Length: 276
Image (cartoon, rainbow, N blue to C red; front, top):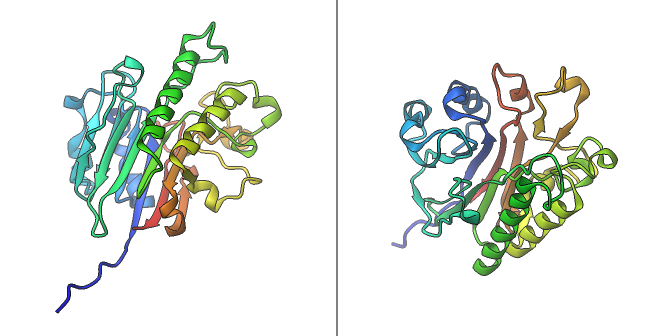
């Protein structure tokens, strides 16, 4: 008798810039209640590995975890209900040792799924690399990632998520006219992101569900007295999939109400459900 055929099942992958995992670990329960992800990618964990709140993650069913963190800044983590393996091609981007990328393979019946979790540098306030080292670092980081992506070839059975700190499309910001000169939406950043996408032949999964002529935000500044009323948002958090998975997208969610949680991040969780 032949072995039964493997049946593709829906997988939920979520991403959230948590802006300190130790401070906001209690909010993970609300995220799980709302989105119930199988794989959760976090950015800006802001803690060295030895202080990561493993107990909180374990209590929520994330029995598999791979993390890379540092004290006070940056840091990324992948929490999963499914077995994980760290990919062997981890890099020290721009030679700064600042914990901005984590690649893992998720063990699935249909074969492993690569998941890449990125936290791209924000870039400071002045969009001029000659006078702003933070902006220069951002451009260098994306250029290095793009070259690495191109060397690996088109992505296959892969998902890329994270706080990429670039809002590339006109309706990824509250006002294209007023934001075009602001870091995160400048033409040089937008073109850099487009080059990165082309290098891996990545597919923008969120815009699969929300047409490009509709507003789509994942971040609202702490500076707004009433963020919901002003609604001056940006789409800084992204989920891309390899072209072979573009037809497997089932649904997405942007958990906008998370912006109202007590002591929350200025980013909100984003989830993609995909049949793999």
